[in-house]
Image (tube, rainbow, N blue to C red):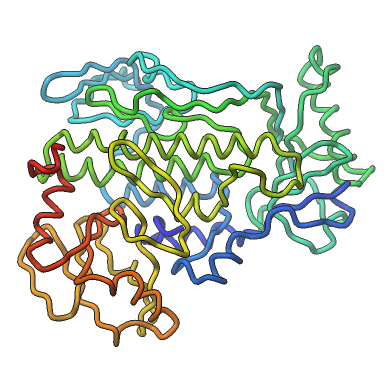
Length: 449
């Protein structure tokens, strides 16, 4: 939601979705629900960690917003088009494609392969995956049904129904509610035809909801297996892997979608810097150096969650969801970790803290997503076109965040923030800003080491 806020679409996402309601456990949906995972917004709001809050927006409702936003910014979006073969040239790439008009060739500087967990581009580039399979086969079905007799006015993002060993997920939003069921494939389902499988799932739904007279309208059924894998490389020449093409993980914890968004956001500012001639192409090696270790840790966290019994509390090695979302720490030389977002370190490669201002905005709202931002004392003057200067004094800070300001930004003359909102470096004096940007963009000798 912070990234969508910076993109200017937070309101549109909120209008399409609904507040997070947490996860529950019960014998059946009609029974008493016990909280398994509380709504994440509660922790964010309690600690005032962000200018926004976590939110639920169905992928089918989110993607049209992103599509329109891309078109509004001049992106050429083509449907009914199949990418075929990629040719890596010295000065760019050529991509052949098929469409209704017979196809052709697209020439570009770089390619981002976001073609999913069965990525054909990843395979054609010879990039292998490392990880493990998660045993067992699962089945999911999207359906329509009136579950209000079981809910009785209650709301939840998902419920694990013990009696049926099945998850129920709320889809869409309150005005256009659909549901999804997820469960394991029973041994006697192996030989069922599609109609028989649909009937078997309807029986599972009646048991899971506690509504014996329920007759769901099942729209779609999918059989699937999962695993915990990360690509051994995120870059091959001028092609980059993002999202499920770069990593697959069990769905437990809901970490996959957000991780894919983070991949793209991390890569985008580097691509922009190189395409616009502000940085050498080797800057793009940093994408793999930063994202692959974090993605490996995130996949491991999803794997830990997949091995827990529904309703079980945190186990050894489990990192809380807020740290995974807001505590990303890109270390040096391909290291990474998760920090406590309530105790920001202000080290390079970390997310700086949300600081509320007297005018109601957040310091985050002043960060330029297209340039570096220098957050400095109000008496600083800089003349570098690569950086937006944001002079801040203690008088600008809300009383609620004055202590956080003093313990973070206030410890130094200022900080340089990257276009993706991560800390680039600490400013000791005004002369440091250009050096920090040069090192971040790999324009200096020190960056080579």
